[in-house]
Image (cartoon, rainbow, N blue to C red; front, side, top):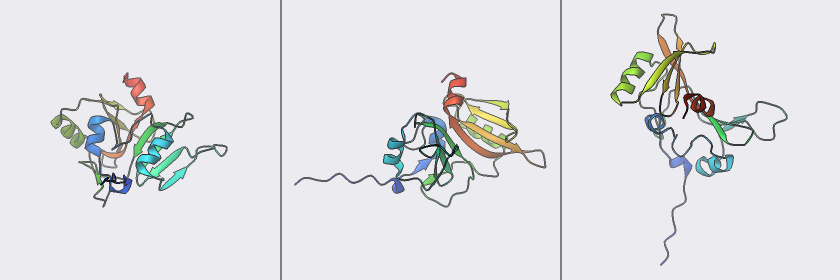
Length: 166
């Protein structure tokens, strides 16, 4: 009797943001993957958008709050997350949430022995960046009216990795 291998179902996949921070991979997704590889792993995107009207394929595929940005070579060049609220048992947010302060993230990274650097952002969208050294994961913090810095987004891109020398 021949046993059939079970079909992979991306909807059954569990993604851990802590694992993403430690490994640099978001479940089966990593920088440099082709569109075809992403679709095999995750299925069709929930939504998509383009950056130019003459673009042949969408520049961004969206899976819930996760955005995968593709470059001209049709490979993932950025993974971007915001809106850290999930009722899904498929996403383990670790400590990440919309109310997370920079000091709390620093404490958590120290507890996991994850090296990081802190720098001011060069954009108007973020006031502070905490960047992991090994995988160039950027945590974007915005300053609240009370002067605290709260998490607004998490990203990883080929540009971060190149500038960090990864």
